[in-house]
Amino acid sequence: MDARRKKLLFQSQHCGIKENDILLGQFAALHLAEMTDPELTMFEALLRENDHDIYGWVVGHQKLPPHVDTPVMNALITYKNSR
Image (tube, rainbow, N blue to C red):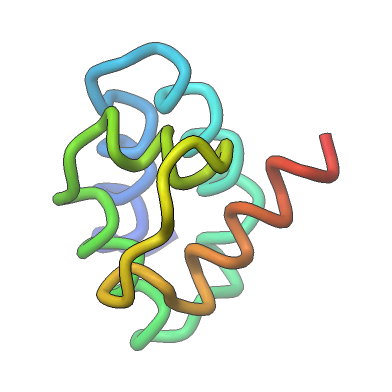
């Protein structure tokens, strides 16, 4: 795994709230290796968002704003719903 992916994996496992650490960390462990550079950029941007907002978007408690309505976010939501 290259340095960028290692950094993203670590960040996704240490977000701030435990629910996101688990969800994002497991998602990243499964999908980072296959992500393209644009998808990695989308994931980096997602990790900069507020932890509570991310959780709210993923579980459907908050409406998904256009700036995070990306293929990576949709894959994350699909991953969460498949569990």
